[in-house]
Length: 329
Image (tube, rainbow, N blue to C red; front, side):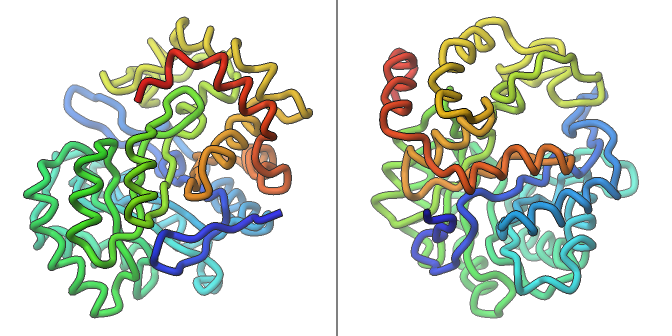
């Protein structure tokens, strides 16, 4: 069974499932105390989780400069110290935050900020290069994104990054960036069994890009958990774009859809989360889901999918039949 995939035409080999590091960043606050993190974290458990992921074969770790205002990068750097050659680090730039106060301060898409943000990320990560450097402003106008290409190419030439990409859900934006950027190797986008983005996946096929799947478990909805989350968790006061949760609990209409496909996703003995990740592995050879992990137990469950592999054809077809009304894009 193949347990690795390639980041597009970069030639960079990664585990077929990576670890998302948003949740280990801890709190980040926007205006009016809007939470943009996942609540308080236990840094020691975060490091144990990263080590467990490594033991289970994970090589890709995806973080961002603003996760916990840089805290996620610091913890990841501590955890992989001495093992840098064993891992592929992806981070992001464009969202501005203040480390001392853990406040979100808006966005900056300027080339100068891309360079400055990378230097800060390298310092926190304790490394001299990032493997995949991603623009983190989903809806940035294309001309502003294209203004970054020369700077990103220069960073490749300097050896500070190996490849770059864009975290965007818009296929036209993804296509324009890939066309302009010789070392654009990946598009990170929202992708799960509940929200398939066939148009972005088609762009990845056309331009030989990896599809990094954020939200592969729909922010925890596809784990089947029904417990309420706290007010310091982004799901507890969900922004407009986060429709999976309402007031800290699963949104009823989406919880109903999860129940519709539970039997198909778990038919071969998988857990619900393993089935959802298996669906992504079956969806395309380019997909690399990056579920957020904050405990060793979560790592053990979710990363067992590497051994289980893609959902089988019969179960996959049944899921598609049950969710046919959602497959309009």
